[in-house]
Image (cartoon, rainbow, N blue to C red; front, top):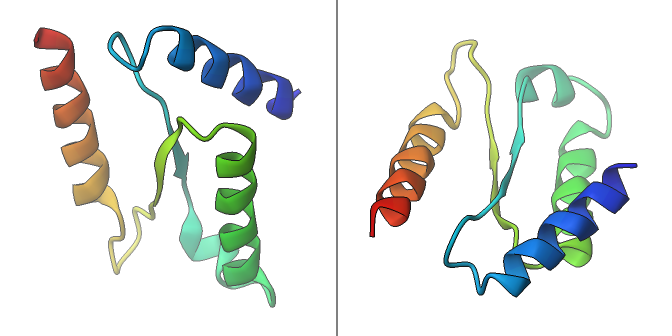
Length: 88
């Protein structure tokens, strides 16, 4: 289950003190979600639930590849930062 996977990732991250790896929620196709009547609330609740289950999860990134582009810069920056962390 998604919950079980998040709990497992959180446990592993805590046991490594966050020194070896991190994980992050990325919500894609946000342009489709926001079209839903409760899309913005759905995204907000999903990110909140992920944080409650796995508090070591980095803050979520919301993306869309359609104009207006959203979150792609943040996603790229997060990947670069994660790679730089692993080089230390």
